[in-house]
Amino acid sequence: MKKLLIIATAALILGCRHRGDSGNPNLITQDEMLTRNAADIAKLTLGMDKAQVIAVMGSFQAEANDGNIPNPFRSEVLMDGANSYEILRYWTSNPPPFVHIRDRDTTPVVLKNGKVVGWGEAAVNGILPRP
Image 1: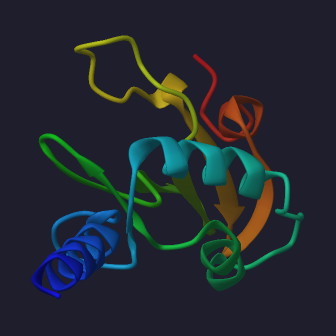
Image 2: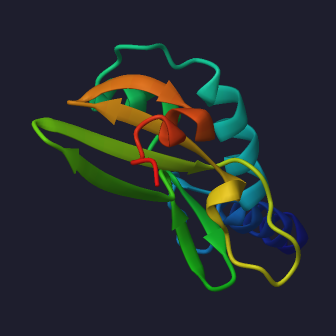
């Protein structure tokens, strides 16, 4: 009977730890984040607002050795006259070993005045000032 109780307890503990030590259901693995983000980018449509983008892409975090990685990985806001652009960068590919996540490891989603106008580097290059 003790063996059965020990095995059941161990299975319960291991089952709860697959999403990290915190047991947080919004904490996933890095590989799972990359897979989800790559698949979910394809579900976006032009004209979505930020809340819709967040609903499609999720607001989870990936567990990393040096801290948790948020989703989106990074965001920035640019102003051009009366227009406001927000760039949400979603982590979609792994950098080389021992290299931090770079912009080229992300897929940017560009919102103009709160609505999606495109994604990918071409969308970002379309709003950046030309030299």
